[in-house]
Amino acid sequence: MAEKKTNKPAANQLRTRQPQPREPIVVLVGEHGVGKSTFGSQAPAPVFIATEDGTSNMGGIELVEVDGMLDGDPCVRTWPVFLDCLQAVLTAEHSYKTLVIDTMNGAASLLAHYVCQAKYGGRWAAVKGGGEAFMSYGQGWKTCAEEIKQALRLLERINAERGMLVILTTHVGLHNIKNPRLGDYQRIEGDIEKPIWSVISNWADLVILADYEITVIEKERKAYSTNVRILRCGGSVAEDTKCRAGFEIPNTMPFSFDGFYSALKDTTNTTLADVMALWPKLDADRQKAALAWLGVSSEAKFATLPIDRLRILYNSMVEAVGDVPGDDPKTDKE
Image 1 (cartoon, rainbow, N blue to C red):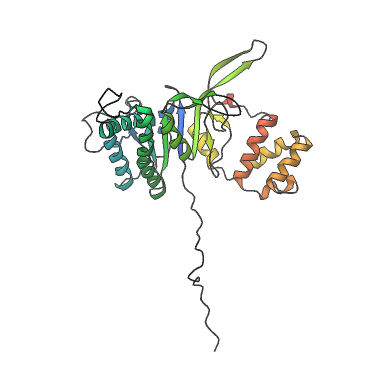
Image 2 (image 1 turned 135 degrees about the horizontal axis):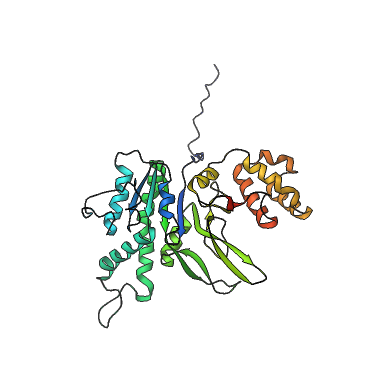
């Protein structure tokens, strides 16, 4: 009698699984008044955790409420209450699809005050004989960078277990960057102390900058900002922005949640059409290098490539030769 075969793996066989698609965790950086809160309000079924009052007069905004908040106060005022709000979004019954933290630099400020009280006895600056203080050798900010990971883990669970899109807004700031190749320079990042910002920006899926389009007039050697709002997503020496693999979007696009989300969810051949429109503009050397990087023999194979690879190719082509003719973000004034 033949031995019955089973599909049970051997005891020492490596077990694997494929990751499941999920909504992104997005950090939206922008100056005050550019429309960060409005951007979050346009997301699917949003609920807000507010650390500053930027939503009271918007209308239609739903705010998370937990014990410990002052009656009638829309804002979270302490770090423990902020964590309670995250826990409520994770475990309570609700049908919201997007969580908006408005703003994350406000949450970081709450954390700093909590750490100063809990770890350093309320001492911000060192005094003789007073013991270690929050600002002693920057130890307080390093402690905050570790403590904030508790909130980020809750946000990860909200994203994964509740299937929610997560948007963290933050005001814009400048950070000093030390670079052995380029020398020291300043870069646009979130207005959060560097140790905390590094943790947040490395952890997020997308870091995008809400900005105004800039027109450079070479003859005058001047740059002029317009009132056309755009999103910058590609990353550069000038700004800390990024798109994690699987969440690629165009490097620049009109400042519109619908446009952003459509690009993020685009699984059609729109990107392929854009790539094919730009391909003839590349010189032979760049075409050869692109094909080698993609691992295909000719542009006829582009249709077989995954969307994320095509988006990376498209972004690099735009940087090299310019955008698709007729594709102009100025057409969207929103």
